[in-house]
Length: 202
Ligand SMILES: C[S@@+](CC[C@H](N)C(=O)[O-])C[C@H]1O[C@@H](n2cnc3c(N)ncnc32)[C@H](O)[C@@H]1O
Image (cartoon, rainbow, N blue to C red; front, side, top):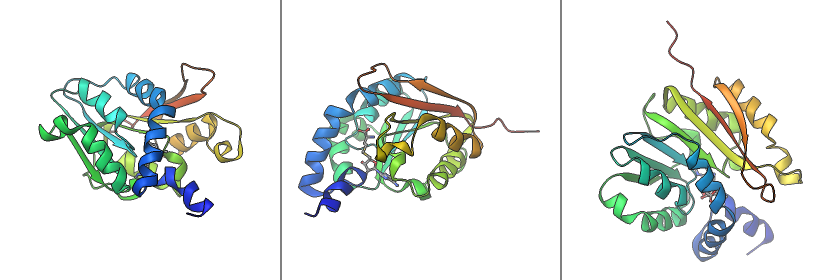
């Protein structure tokens, strides 16, 4: 595999190498997943969507709370779909979790459908990010919550995704009440940009 092929893996884990990348993501991103779900105010009957669910860690957390709702997930990696389905198999069987292949740029859901849409370590791969955010805005109910978690680092790959930049992207996409929450562990700097879809205007 070429270096660029290896570098592409986190953006679309594929095959056996993709499974290893998924295993590593479970280690490095575990805290990011648990912490983000803890911020979302998921209720028993919430309808929730995760974009780029990877191995499905956060899906499992969300499904434990939305016991009478449904947790949906979209990821464009077949390899991750299989891994996440296996992890969440009993919730998938009872139709409390619905996972499918798909791309944030064209979400296969009707307008105003979800109470909460979140995404963890995934916005880096959206070109352009505004198109993905417009899709999230479309599928969220008025007053619904959007949450985007990302690494807060200065190195080349992440400089484009500093908290103020993602906050401004959310604001320019029409979201309101946007705030930045810092992750719990300074040794592993992450943040969550969280906001709401505007209430229907009369
Ligand atoms: C770095 S991994 C993060 C996975 C998981 N959210 C986590 O934090 O452990 C990014 C995931 O987003 C998916 N992804 C990237 N771009 C996507 C897109 N445009 N639409 C849907 N999924 C995407 C990848 O396939 C991968 O599973």
